Length: 285
Image (cartoon, rainbow, N blue to C red; front, side):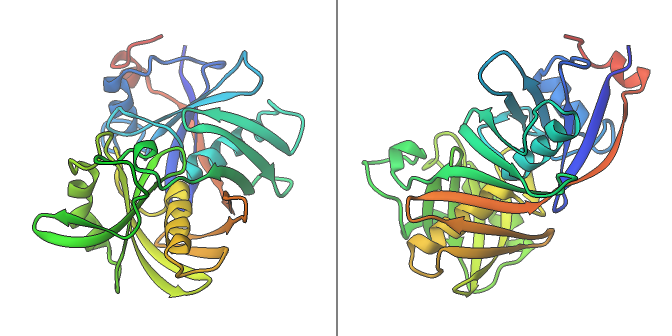
């Protein structure tokens, strides 16, 4: 039986949705790598595997192109919310999704689920909760040595770990150059996502992103939340922030209660089935 999939993007950050209730595929590291490969597979920045039903709410697995599993993804969650809405899994425009990084609350803002607002939950800057090595502390404006160069880093978790580095200018080349070394820095025992950020004004920031397990990416929802939250913690921006990325913009709201809300677009691109030649290379569940 041909394996059916759908593909979407959030600001150029693209995911394949594989629904185990339609056709299942074993989510082994080798299979994930092959499906995400842009030359030998379907090609994507990751796989959204779900909904996994049976609990109080649908669950989602977020799988990186290197075969690892992410706790949370802002763009992935908006995409998955659109998929759930399109497939009529849920009767309402407001619902919840269970991830490894916690429960998120979703609000579909239009009739086609092209604009979605998500409560991403609270952030924490506490080292043990991110995690960051060393004594227990808030990791705010802390020196981080990367290949002999010292950067000022603020680290946090929004269900997944982030390292935010302010810079006077932000470029793709810089993110690609230092991202792999920040991701795997010994200070971060579970690896980490990295954002370099330039503050435009108190309501706008510009970022470039290196994602753990995926590499350089045009946009990221959780990275936008993290960069906005870190900039707010440093006193550089107010509570409502527009985050600018090569793929587009997201609106981030930082509540007085510490809750982070993200609003942004999502679009479908295509759907199809795996070719029998590809299926032969995939271990069926």
